[in-house]
Amino acid sequence: MMTLVKYDELFLAKSYEWLNDPEIRDLTDGPVCLTHEMQQKWYAQILSDPTYAIWGIDWDGVKIGASGIKHIDFSNNVGEYWGYIGEKQYWNGKGHTLMNLVYQKARELKLNKLYLVVLVNNLRAFRLYQSEGFVIDKQDDNRIYMSKKL
Image (tube, rainbow, N blue to C red; front, side, top):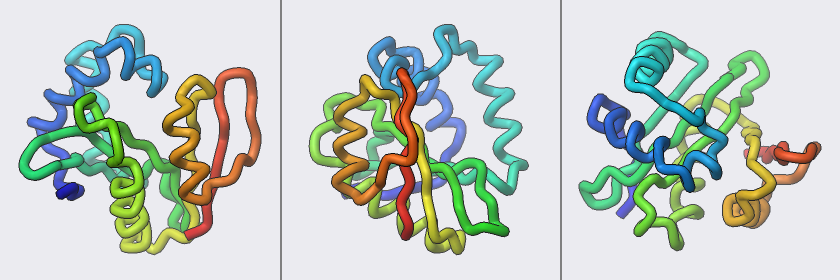
């Protein structure tokens, strides 16, 4: 069973591995050369940022990914969703469950709208977001910008 749990140093270490995987990096538009220093600086920064919520994705005790809502605008009740499953053996059939857990967290934060950015080459994620009711707001050569009212 999938749950969203506290994102801690153990998830941070796994995220370093996941985001340095070329396939995952290409699907998430991650930095080409993620260093431990860059990651530690980012982690320290988000811990004190009230506009950033992050969770580890746990599947029956296995750390499989990370997700969150960033750029939370509490005055307009909106935030930007992001997430990925880093353990590739868990890629099939988990997206809808993850999205439902994120919607629950978003509602707890009193958000009524989520938006996201997906790379045009990430067709699996794009199809997931479409099936979840996200609509295209705009698109450029590399990215599709989508949103959904909760």
